[in-house]
Length: 372
Image: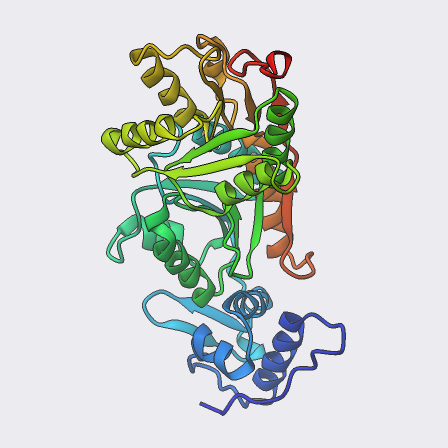
């Protein structure tokens, strides 16, 4: 294998993935990278050129589209000479859920948006979900990643313990040169395309409303520490002036009712007791309502509760839940549209789309300002 050199010009204004594609393309055309040999791995290229795996993946995907590289399962990325250009048609995009235990209503809305959006841009969508990937999984090898796979939309696992696995899945796609778009969550430390709600603005909406209603002693409650949750709670804090609000944060274990109840015990034990709880999602808010009902704590008279997502059924709760609405169908549609742009090389840099959210006022937050 020829030593890969040639320098990148970081001052030229030409995107780095475009420069790398041209360097590799020239080496292939001059025969320095020989037909039939394997291209160095994404990590090796990233080290040699000082680039992120995402940038390497962009360049390699474009060369695959140009017919100068061929991904072969179990072997790697094979170099083709210009006369051997591969013209395999890419027919599919994969929509991959890394955690099928996510809220069913959210998943349903995302999935319902993906297939028609894929048809709009000329692809079929493969919907795939499970608790992680296994190397021996037949569907993973043959459908999720195959020579006919043009790209993927990834819905990352939101739980705190899944961070390493989320990165490992992204690494796998980067190393194979398959473009992908992240939805619902993003990875702040990683160059990647993403489509999410504007969660910081959503948190600000919640904070401004609670401030207007007289609440300056607030508890946040979540079972996940991820980018979307952090943005929501950061937006909440940003709605208050320095020193204006007392905000305590509580993280409980996913799926543990005991841990959840202990978190509520700690909230109620604070002195002074918070007057409002901002839950990171509607499901947590619903469980707060259920637990407080069992404890004979009336909502919103004794404790105000605000959720996030606007799942369809929360309007029918007693009291109906005040929340921040996300448009999951729009997220799914925009993720597919962005992926098509990436596949067809219509993007500049790693685009990160943030979609607006909507504040929904119902009956779970008490106005205590009038009693102050």
